[in-house]
Image (cartoon, rainbow, N blue to C red; front, side, top):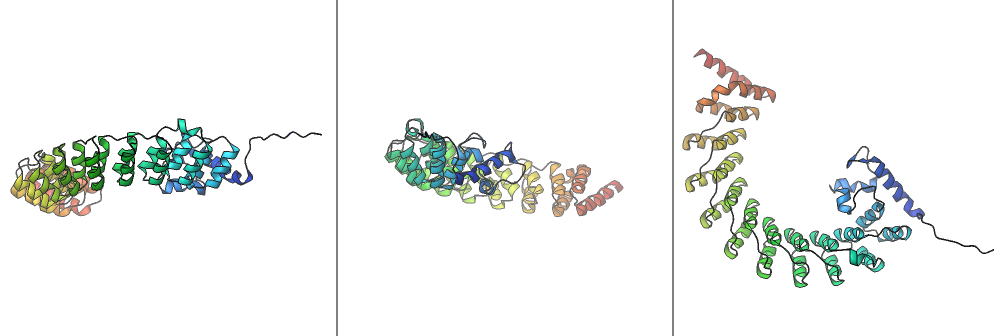
Length: 376
């Protein structure tokens, strides 16, 4: 008797535990939250603060490709090979997942064994590898005719991956936009900024100097000032003051003409940067608002408040006393009571704030001062 045998879709025995884990994972997953502990294999997604579906390039954890993509994430070529033999699971997203995590051996395997991917893969795989700094993967994909988009160089530049930026530029792969130079400047990657300036023509925007200043990258700001023409906005000096970057405040004041706003002094006061506050007071004309004293009082910056009371006229609002009481700054409450008389009419609000936060000493002080006022 002739026996006819036909392959039927199923699972290898060694894969069954993984699929059992996946089913348990799906059952406990609801609205991207977990009602019970996830299976051990998947806990890394939470320890590393990964977005499960986004980082695995799947629409949902219930997607039938999930086990394959987890194996790709783990770099386990053997399991990837076994999964593919059981099911037709290989899609362009599998290649993108392997590229994103830098697993060149899996990228090579998928390229050789899933020829249908190439025309439909688009630029996602190269873009993902470039963004996450996987040079060898980028090189392999580009040399095998996979395409990239401007996002590849933009993202690589923003993250400081100079070798990838150089490779993409040299091989004419995808180009970039002004986001590349803006992002490299924002994150302080001077070598990338210099390369893009000398070799690319997409330019930048005022965001480059503004955000480089916000993040304290003096060397980048100096380079942009000398070599480029986009300039910055008043936000640059404002943000330098807010971030406590005194050298940048000096540089922008001495070399740039975009100026600042009252936000600069207000922010310096709020954060207690007395050196910056004094410099702005002595060298610039924008001034500040009553928010300067309000916020300095709220944060307990006595030196700033004393300076404002003695050297400036903006004053404060009733919020100064209330916020100081709320935040437990007894010495500030006492100073304001003695030197800024108009705040006294808000003593009840200040006492309520102190009580609400259990600052009993402040409440007692204000109660005593309130009773003394009533005697007058």
